[in-house]
Length: 172
Image (tube, rainbow, N blue to C red):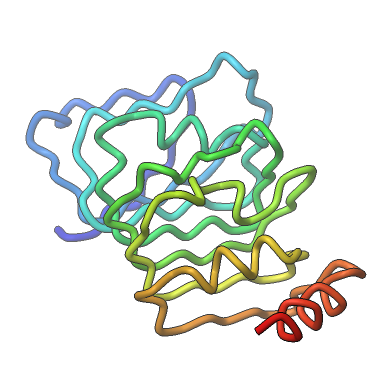
C-alpha cells in the first residue's frame, strides 16, 4: 500500500517495521500532552509525504526532522499545530521538499525562520493559511526560484510591510 495512516502514541510499537516502506505518513495525536523529552521515532523510511494532524505542541516539527530518515520527503502538511522558536530551522535540511501546506499557531517565529535562508530549496508549491507574514518572509518566498504556486489564505502582513515593499521598489 502506498499510503498508511498511523495512530501513534508514545507506547506504540510496530511489529512489521522491518518490511514497511511508506510513501505517506500521517500523524494523529491521541494524547496532546507531551513533554520536551518525547521524541518521534519511526522505524521505517518515509519517501513522499508527512502529514501532521491537529494539536501537536511547539517543537514537534524540529523533533520530526531531527531524524535523518525523515529528510527525504517531498510534501509536508502541517495543520493546526503549534510553532515557536524551538522549531527554528526545522526544515533547513529538507532538500527534496517541493510542496508545503502550513496552517499553524505560530508564536515568536516567522515562516522564513523554519528554513536556512542561505540555502537553495526546490519548493514548487506553498500554501499558507492564517499566518502573519513579514518582509523577510516575502523576501525568502521570492528567492525560491522553482516556486510555481503560492496560496496565501487569510494571511496577514505586519504593519510596516507595505512601507518596506514601497521602499524596496523605489530603490529598483
